Length: 245
Image 1 (cartoon, rainbow, N blue to C red):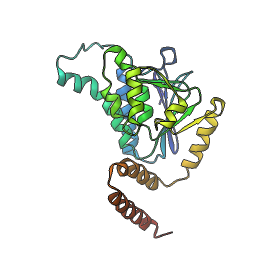
Image 2 (cartoon, rainbow, N blue to C red):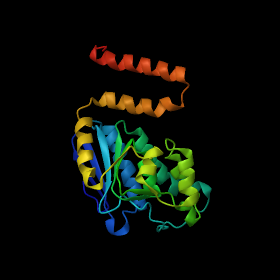
Image 3 (cartoon, rainbow, N blue to C red):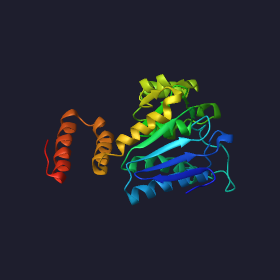
Image 4 (cartoon, rainbow, N blue to C red):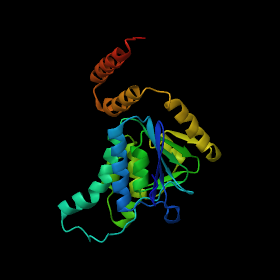
């Protein structure tokens, strides 16, 4: 499916999503947020995918969200703000978490604001050495609590630095902080992604979903409980194949 601003291409066993507003820094409009969450939720419901790959067209991943009030006007109270505006952002983050296979972000340039949060909320993020990341919302008078909620696996001091400095950090800083998973030479970015997908495409989807769920749950558990959960999970999954190796 091709939308004017988001391109969806299913190439089994993957869904490729491209943010397609390069002339405007690939900034998200509100309807794009709704569509992105809906398509990821649809992919979750249908199943059969080993991953979703998210890219931006042009030189940058995305400069975040378009800061504009639509025809419906500004919110009239806190409840209206939460349900009509903030929920559109939070629904995207939730759709990423619910999708059973990895969300893979490919970052060739700038990932700012909401886009930085998308990268943080991805399961895997492969970035060019030229990529940069920032949370500049405080410059616009907005404490970015929504974006912070997507950075739970990123080093807290790096998140604080991103917010309070409003400066861009480079790919190596992002890697060291857990914001991304790999940095490669710019000219090798697509080849690296292709190799990663070739391997991921060979894996069993239930095994993939099991790993994603365990990674999401285990870090916050006491060590003994995490260990028990690992054992019971492995025993259950292996029983599907009647193999214990």
